[in-house]
View 1 (cartoon, rainbow, N blue to C red):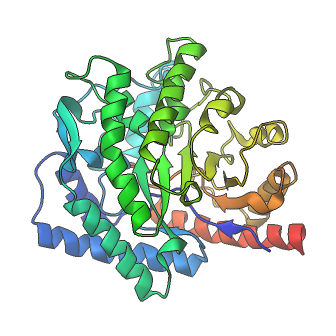
View 2 (cartoon, rainbow, N blue to C red; view 1 turned 90 degrees about the vertical axis):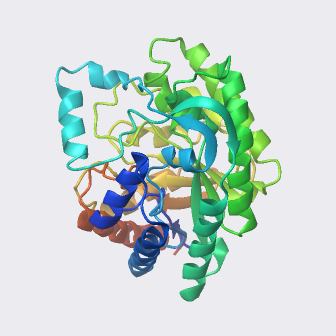
Length: 383
């Protein structure tokens, strides 16, 4: 028995690809065959790098997407223009910090998730071509390396992150907006699962929106929103096997104070109602590393998996393998069963094209440390 390794989805993009994706986000588009060629090469490269690092459950690095959620504007109807995203509350508490962080994390042209598409019409999944191409590409490249689709995963956003980020000129309530987005995302969830991949649902809304859209609301109001998101996810997953899905919950993948973050304990009962087989949590960063102490006090669903983030994706420190092993060992000791533990990263390394805190070669070094640390922890825990 050993601790398997994975990561949270997005991986560094080459400069040429990043430029194409930024142009796509801005609505200028690129010549399709040329774009596909660049994405194919980039995806093959990140698959090779993950295999070289010894990652067990690998992804496509979101190489063909402009960001982890705004890409849906190219697949769904109803989106256009730009929203004015409410900033994270912690950024406003320290004079000048937001500007400093943005300048550091956006060193060049980038996709601006502070201004995602707004909702201008009825939402429906109308363009399956990019989705089918993405799945077929990943399957082909995996099989070329002798890997089965089940050894890989693809990501898709939570309906809540889209609903919370978009200004809405159409739907009369958050509930109606979530329902429409959830119905559209079901197409994506079903397709990824039908190809045999693991499905990771990226849901920073289930933690981050507490200090963003709901910063001025009560905790109860926020939890009501989160509950509605989880119910929407569950409806969208009705035809997907629970064990094929993992839910990624985080407090925002940015280097900031994070002193307005909602505690894990406050959201646990809501997020574990999601019809999924496991949870990916940020457990390496300095604001949430202590929350492993809660894990033996919480209610766990049956046959559940915890993918613990033991690599910080906002700092250029390369974690020593012994540090990674220490984190995994102390988490394993408070879990109901150490066998439920998988080693991962706190979040992605480039959640939007051009938005990254970690230098690309450093990101790959961090994945090497992840696998080395997981090997050490496995030897100590399981012999």
